[in-house]
Image 1 (cartoon, rainbow, N blue to C red):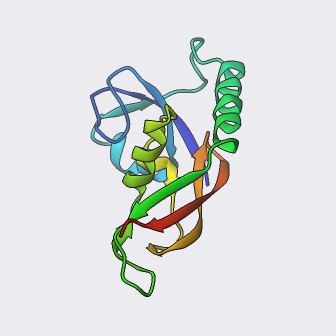
Image 2: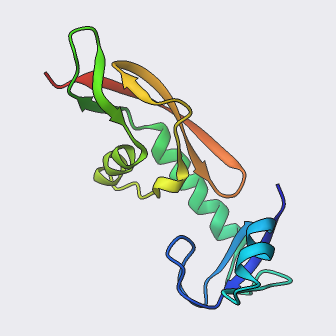
Length: 141
C-alpha cells in the first residue's frame, strides 16, 4: 500500500487538527482530501518529525504491551457464548486503565469475540508493524 505525507488544512475528526502532518493512503489523499482542499501534499517530513523519537516511543509501547495480561469480562450463557461481543473500544478502555493509550483504529480484531476463552488480537504500531496480543475473555456471571 502506498502512502503519502500530507499537511492537514482543516480539522478532520478522523485524521487530526489543522497543521498536523500525517501519512494517509494515496487514494484517500488524491481522490478526497486534495480536491476538497482539506490537505496539501508534502515532499518530505518536516524537521519537527524525528524518526528516532518515533521508533523509541514504539519500542516503549511494545515493552509495555509484552508484560500485560489482558483479561476482560462479559455476561455469557452456560455454553460459553457471550451476550453481545467484545469490541475494539472495550479493549482500548482496558488498555487505557493500564495507562497504555491507543486508538480504536489501532486495534485489529480479525473475528468477532463472542466466546469465552483466549483470543488473538493485533495492535497496529507505526505504519507497518502489528503486535499480537492474547486476550482472555471470562464470564462475569
